[in-house]
Image (cartoon, rainbow, N blue to C red; front, side, top):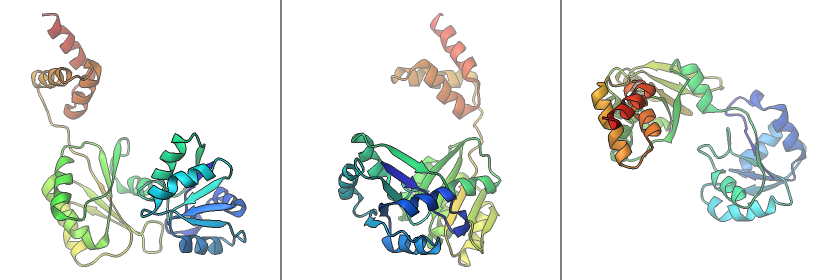
Length: 273
């Protein structure tokens, strides 16, 4: 069995009883950084000394099959340096390989910078998308942000402190001057901080220098008003491209704010003319 175990993202007190129990009994632990995991075991006062196997971005592709095969006979606990493995951390490749080999995969839930930042951001939480780290190169970063310009769900990004100011500036260009943004820094730690404002308001603060782990939460785009006729044309175009009518209506409705049911009825009426 593969056991994905969420570890604290800053505050050691967030370690769950289940995490401690599993680590106390683990025989094999696949760790993003074995030194970090050793320090975690010591901090949690766990006397158990399991076999530690390095599983990181540079070796996961080659280690996944070996570990998945091993997990058929032995439980393997998988940990990253902080948070849930496989979410912007090593683990996805191993999970995919384990699933392919028919190995059971489970998880011990726990701290998540993504969910915590969303919850305290003040942005809508009913629909959101996690975009991970933006590209390092400015041109590629601006390209990604431009494609997200009409995204209506709340967007969550990880960002490096050294690139935060430039990323916020690019967000201002891609999303417009009034889009709300929350920068969440050092979550669960002593100097936890949340800065809220527009991109232009936050850039000046970020340029002064920011330290720590950063999560950026961005308000989704306001639905663009569209006429029923224009929306109907969009639905028909999607249907012509091979999409099912129901799915086409749902997609256009999400983008325009119109009723999916009304668009569906309109499309059926148009077919009957």
